[in-house]
Length: 464
Image (cartoon, rainbow, N blue to C red):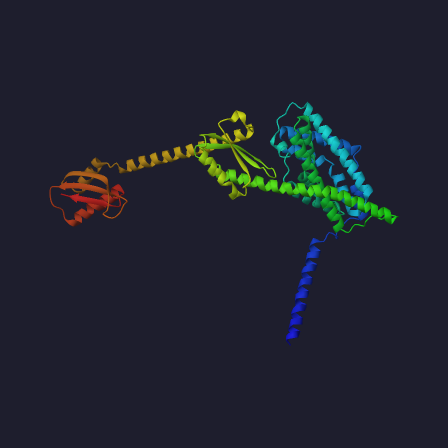
């Protein structure tokens, strides 16, 4: 009996798991609207060649992207990325590796090399003749790749090859991939580095282009293998083996350095985030201001340089600041404080201007808030003073109509402290002298009239 129940439970679990697998397979399947394999390969092949229309489109896109970087216009840069045909040969490399086609890989590499050289020449020519030579934020963003750039390129490549392998092409995916993967701006930034003799800009931007290209090719290869594309067959097994070995060697040559560089990008990104947290949390001083900081990552000699204005920091404060570095994972990082010698430091004018502007805005907002508070306090004081001022003469005359025998009268608001409390209470203190003695009912009548007339909750009436 127990064995039968166990078998039924096992069958039920198996049935449930089968239903879940079918549901997942149905929802995430890429086979339903998949285009013909030969059609996809032909489509990617058409985008590999850079000659005629494709070449001119590339040149025009490079000029547009260079202008966008020069004038710091995001919209213009996006337009250039939509025009750019650089995705073709990069996806061609991934496809060639995926289907074991060495000739396709060679043709794609050749065209990608031609496209990169033409892009560098075109952007260098533009920046040589351009009257603008200041590196704007859009251009600077392409000089130091991060791990997020690699992730964006990888997932963008996945979206691109999946959309490209459908019968009805998904029209909004390919433009989005072109914008997200950002292949064009790094090449233009590299051209800017050549034109201005800035080698670090050139290598940083070209490195970003290579990382993006490798990630897009890798994502294309994975989807091609996932979709089960047929491998290219060769008449001679020896030739097929030689082709496979050549492709494997080329992949290793590309992937091994890329993996190492990717690891260094991860470490650099983690370091920069930790440095930003350190400066944000520990760089708030009372009599001085951090106007700029530079986080330089090196494998064994990273450093954070703070540019401080205001009162000089004493040595013990600097040592205390350095002692806080290990708490942020920056134990082997050198902390450099630049203060009082701005002419000897590398100053980012835009950053300082932005920081000073922020401080002025914060000070102005605080000053306005303090003035508003003072105005409110004065207004409350005036209202309280006006309400505290009692028309004693008018009250006396009105009291005469109620009690004609009144001889003298005065009224004032007074603060009364209890024996145990710390907060005073406001009481209307009234003194009245009459020519005759009044009964308790007449006193209550006077108190009610005073309470109604003066809007006071507490009244102390002294009658003589």
